[in-house]
Length: 177
Ligand SMILES: Nc1ncnc2c1ncn2[C@@H]1O[C@H](COP(=O)(O)OP(=O)(O)OP(=O)(O)O)[C@@H](O)[C@H]1O
Ligand SMILES: O=C(O)C1=C[C@@H](O)[C@@H](O)[C@H](O)C1
Ligand SMILES: [Mg+2]
Image (cartoon, rainbow, N blue to C red; front, top):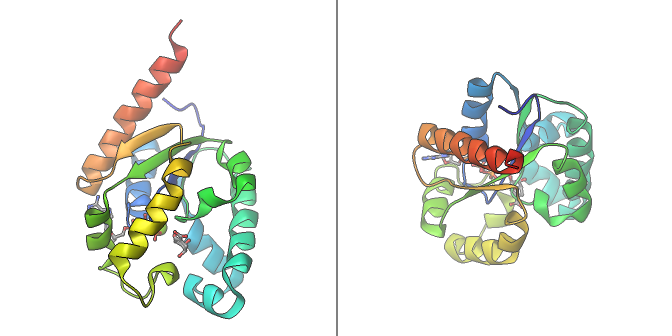
């Protein structure tokens, strides 16, 4: 369906990019890349450690560099980090493929990020609901620049299936006379 074109999943922390991305890669016969995991591999540090010791701007530079490298490949599903949409330069790389926004409401995001406390530096030490709401408010217009928006509220296999349905509909629209 995608003729080898990569998929880039964007969306808030807890929207399920890493989880659904793996399922989509399996279904499409694509490779799977988790940008946060790749940054950790390349830097030898946990995401939280980079934020804490070197600051967010160092993390954002690394994120852009790793994304640039990944964007040279085809046949990938790439689960990006929640903040990848913030830097304008990243959009040039994201547009090497089809960009999918996994969209979920704050309550859903909150339940999911509660599973892994301590792994998301931007949610550390504060009211997580409020912080998620602020971030979504700041970023919604950026996520909305994705090619396809998918409701990420169901179980992972349902969200993966819904993503494929939305993609097929979008591609059919694009090829309509
Ligand atoms: N559709 C879903 N239904 C229920 N739980 C989910 C779903 N998607 C993800 N989860 C769970 O929510 C948590 C967060 O999911 P995941 O790590 O995939 O989000 P993410 O978008 O990659 O977040 P981040 O931007 O922080 O990397 C995990 O514990 C995962 O198992
Ligand atoms: O939403 C964000 O800005 C982030 C999300 C995570 O995926 C990590 O990339 C990091 O914790 C920052
Ligand atoms: Mg992730």
